Image (cartoon, rainbow over all chains, first blue to last red; front, side, top):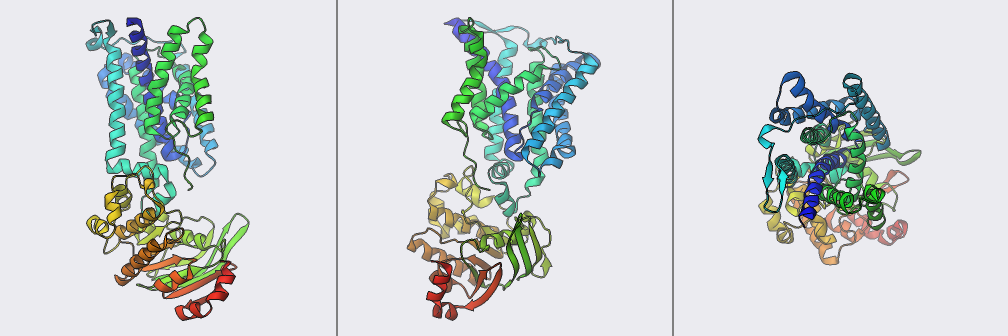
Length: 293
Length: 230
């Protein structure tokens, strides 16, 4: 029993990363109709940035948790204006290719400067110990990651559901053309929303630094799983992305623990689920069929 | 208030509108009639700035709309009621109503909207796409009234509605006309059209081939119905 709870907890923690990344991807896709392949690279930059802030400038984790997402959000807005925006009128495939290229550039730039070796990052001292939940102990840092991600997801959900900005983003996401015809300057929201999605990837990156190997390729595999998560949850569906993120985290953790004699099954389960969901509900579990323009 | 001259519109190689000219005066209700595929909806989309392939002159109160984007046109007082009714599934009824900014001299306060459309008040917290077709039509009209739009561009607002609701839409259109709002109405229902409008533009072969008054439409009803294929 206690090992089951242990695996479940681990699944929720890795689900927290998937949820944060999928959320950013969903927000960006909804507003721009761009599948941002570079999302994993920005997550990597978040972790590498956290590491560099500490080693080069002595900036501790807590400051990094504030500085890195803001900096990446600004960088994301710059990328949107400089590149993504220019391809907005073309087939979305062009932007997918662009962000794929951007991923390779970002990965190689980091590789060039710091190599491919993983760098250790110490857990912040305030969260060094474990938390006693009676039956078992959990590392305090992981408890913090899970709580932080849940709060962040709820905050984004609230922002989208209960503010004027959120309403405009929902409207522009669902029916961009109609929204323009109703006097909403949809274009004005594209850059901030892209930056916001990238900032969320940055948050995930900062949180990853103390518990995952920090290296230039850390986002490359993860982003594939995140794509599967977004497809399962429903492209553009905020709730679906978060729910699928945690769900897939659990499936992976359980699979790795209970199917450890068949690692192939555990590793491919995400994609099998994705294929099944696509056959059953092409728009994803929580997605809507595209409305006509 | 609205003046259209030499409007040409196309999709790729196919020209839909060749040379459209028409006017709408303040407080006037004007219809566009024509066969399916005559380009009526395309014309409204051109006026709204949503159709990329267009040339010609469109002025609103003497101001050239030229290449103004759609949201700027809306802010000058154009209120679009799209043919699919334009309900947002991810917004509640109230949010659908309050999404557009107030643009005109007399936007309806939300309270007045709900007073005129009690059914929208009852369903105010529902997702807009859960409303019936008729209720969604009311919502689309109520939304542009709340904006305070000065010229409504209504694309077949009576299509698929029960007779009682068609009459209700007619009442609303007469009511907004009386407050000085102009309406350009795409309509296939000639009885309805003559009941609410002053003039009727017959669109064919990409042009306004005739402009008819109510009496003329009534006299030539059977000929027009045959022509329209109804």
